[in-house]
Length: 118
Image 1 (cartoon, rainbow, N blue to C red):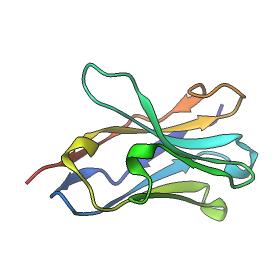
Image 2 (cartoon, rainbow, N blue to C red; image 1 turned 90 degrees about the horizontal axis):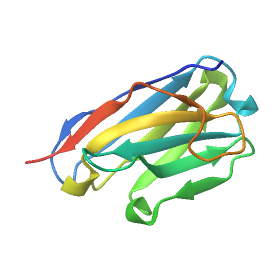
Image 3 (cartoon, one colour; image 1 turned 45 degrees about the vertical axis):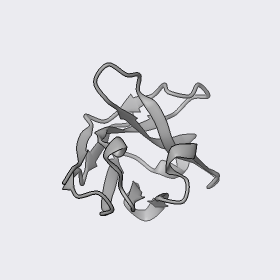
Image 4 (tube, rainbow, N blue to C red; image 1 turned 90 degrees about the vertical axis):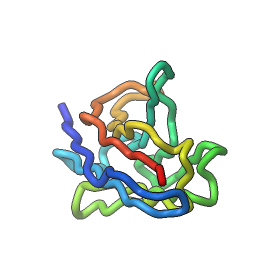
């Protein structure tokens, strides 16, 4: 079973930037989708962005133009570059290695807190 681990969260002011990383324990080129989700207290975990094994990228409307998902296959790592951060981006961000066909199912990381506040 693949394992993933996130890093890079923290506190940032509105308008600032952060980059999250997610390292996988095996080659990400063999994983159907690698994705970033986020969750706030009392809400469901929602998909922010994902990238397929053949490089197709999807973004939630709320982050289009501000967030960029990318990957380094040689390092088995995906990234989420978050720019122009807003207070509503505050959440725990989770990485998912989706090895099957169902969205939202697979191996989750432990999550990393992103707080956007002045």
